[in-house]
Image (cartoon, rainbow, N blue to C red; front, side, top):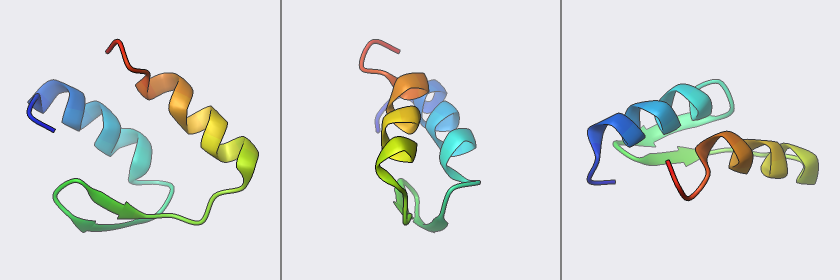
Length: 46
């Protein structure tokens, strides 16, 4: 991610959902509903 503001937002959402492996890499085991819920706050237009 090239935008620090967007990266921070994604990081805050993802840090409680899985393991932070690298700068923008997380490993998560999510149910289908969790995947959908995670996509909503991040969104493509932020």
